[in-house]
Image 1 (cartoon, rainbow, N blue to C red):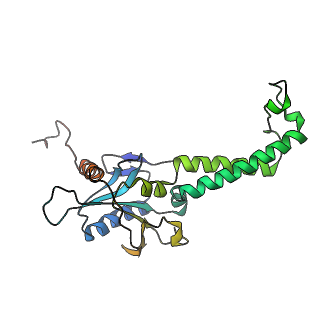
Image 2 (image 1 turned 120 degrees about the vertical axis):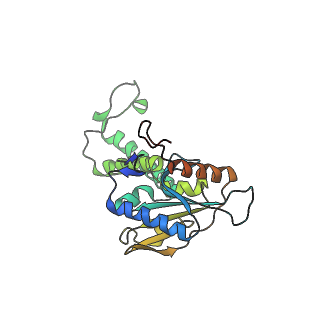
Length: 239
């Protein structure tokens, strides 16, 4: 279940203390890198996702071209990381392979389990079958994996998708020490930051990605909007 955003506090309701700490450390790390404008829970352009932390680095000289942008995702648990990890092409390839196995298995089950025929068609080859009551462990396992990969392809794979969307110049993953088993679990373009005490150490530097000017400006606009807190009318602070 995804956490509900708390607009008043700039954080997500129900998030853990560790996750909030990672976001705080990520903002500090970004500031040291020159990304002095940042905010949490920012909607990322070209996607339906929110960034745990998004930052903007101004150019040193005046120019009409916008500066560079960075997105940091924070993962305090391995379960949270696994939900958004994975490579789109690999997940799709695995799902296609399982679908092929399922079709072959269902063909055999139709031959050996005629009692599962639903009788909605005159000809058996065109009829539908209900295997829901059959205790076939292989079929159940494959069907479960097929559905799981379908949900993951649709709702997960956030890291891989953001890389493809090119929604920012840099992407980093900030994690607790026990979250990753190996650096190869993270897309190549992503930097990896690991919490050590009250700081983040760089396990892998992020690679610079090309992001269109209008996309960088839109992210800056949304960072600014997240940092704007309008006082309530009648509070006495709206002068």
